[in-house]
Image 1 (cartoon, rainbow, N blue to C red):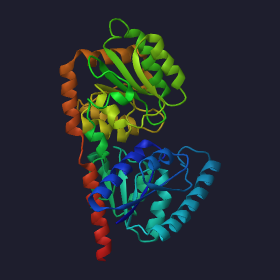
Image 2: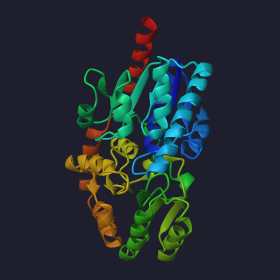
Image 3: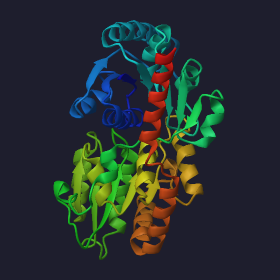
Image 4: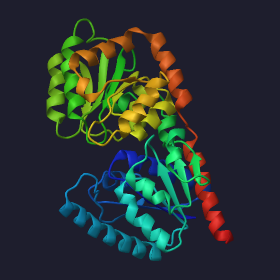
Length: 368
């Protein structure tokens, strides 16, 4: 089985594709080809994971002026043509679109070539690209029941959002070493704001250190992915406050990062939530405010289940973050209850379900 997986730009569209690729290789010995852009996160991560990747031009159009939309349309045409050339050589049995503008050209090309297509939707409210592509796809793999009403009946399946196997299998005791953190006697807070970091989260957490100083330096430690822009400032803030912390622009060992975390402070991207709920991690979610309402919808769903706590970006402050950290530190019973509720929402078998859907589409095509 040959599978082309198109998508990227951000971790939310990339990591579900990687999780699916891993499952397809394990179950069916599939040969995988990723399609992305040179500027996206996939250009760095996919080669590290050992997969081939082809870069095609792509650009989003939402909220852009007319001239930018024309440029994006030209790139889309080049992407369709480039994908056709790739498919003539690679000859995929199926093309999987993981969402976002990166997947549009390859999926359109697959449709023109009568190659089966599967669309993966990670959010409660689907984006424009997936709403369009679902009409020409063979099936849609949805994460939330609420999103299925936006897609054609009869070919939409509730699979959950695939999570990489390594995320689920990392052992806590062995995971502190790579980060230089203490395995005993400390409460560990994992902080990250998406693949590029979040200045508002970085600022609130570092400002919150002043409200955490009294008696907590010997009990509290941080693992903080802050992005390249704020790296020096965040690192100096922890040093100045005297807290033990490992600060990095980007954390590649996310399985180990989750394993050591007693609580998580993060954005509310769909992949992050899939990982948090598959693991049952207590969390404080801060939805990203500048990409529609996707993250807020996703986070509010978890809050309704008691599986996370929510702070809107405009309400974020150092004092409030410190209060949340103290709450989780001082209330083990609340942490345990939230972890249990989080696990009831999670779907650790989502990669397997999606892989089976891929196989069924390929079998249907071969039987025609």
